[in-house]
Length: 472
Image 1 (cartoon, rainbow, N blue to C red):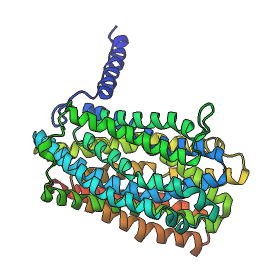
Image 2: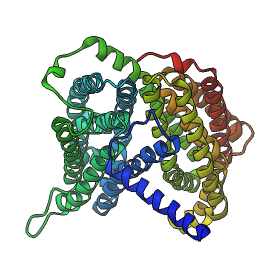
Image 3: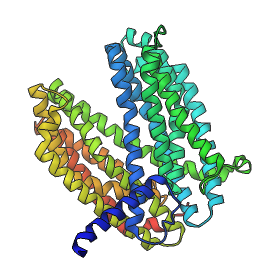
């Protein structure tokens, strides 16, 4: 009887744990089981990241029916919006580290104070970014190589998207506050609300309803910006009502310049981290296109989108590690913080090993969902299999790098990224693709090789333990 009931008991316990993670109940991550802590944080964080990726997919799906000019406008504008994402991720990383440290110190008032100062810093930055986006929208499209008809049709779209940068940055930043506080479920819900709002509003604003013809391409920008704005409104409502440990209070609104400088000092290296990685991927895309042609470029883009999709759960686990590190360092428990990283990395290795097997076995079928062109399928399958061989190391590297960020040591991952991507991956890709003559295949090979080197470097520096002594 025990053999029959024990598995059922474990399933029931796991189901209860999942429900607890989705409810966002208060939990002390500096005590008790680390396995339970990782699950409670990781599930909503994985779902949050999954919903963020829906924005771009939804926009392109509905805009695609408006023609190639609309598609080109969205693609070019999203390339520029990547810079806004970089700022958002940098600010989010900084505020997560500081809030997590204060929560670990059992000082929710200081955590709330830091959160509000982070929001004020974000608002100051977005005023500059948004005004520049509104004024230079047409020039940005021209700079990206847009044809005159794309500039004419796309300027209102770009103006709204870039002018609405405030909601992008605040959505990321405030979710970073919730993650640092260990309330990942609220971050997840805000993305759900924003994404679902966008799904409803996009077709309505683009195509209209009844006798109203809608706003076309401009309607897509309005829907996306408004959808994110609804998510931000929900975040601010939750903070103002004070249901959790982080609360907005009028007394926190006075600028604390020392704290703002500290947050900015943590944020800029994290922003550069993202730009370094994004820049290297752009270079590789160019290299694949110039050495392999259109078919290779198309196959590579299909492969990369699948790579990102399968990495999402690993990102969720990595964010869980950042929160656990920050809170446990705040509680004066550096060894528990280190154990949480090692355990999270172990889970990521197991997951990524399974993904590697899936990609190696089913790459042709996966790529075949997106294209029936034989040459594109061949290149996409090759790219997916080669890139997939490094998944285990991607998982290790992501956890360790996010753990360093969570400790407030944002400069070390930045230096690792610069060395790994710009001083190693890009020269290696050029050597293999053009020097040796492997073409696009050489660029593919450089990805798992470089990611493995980055993961090993991150582990070596993590084991030295300097991050345990960082003050934020």
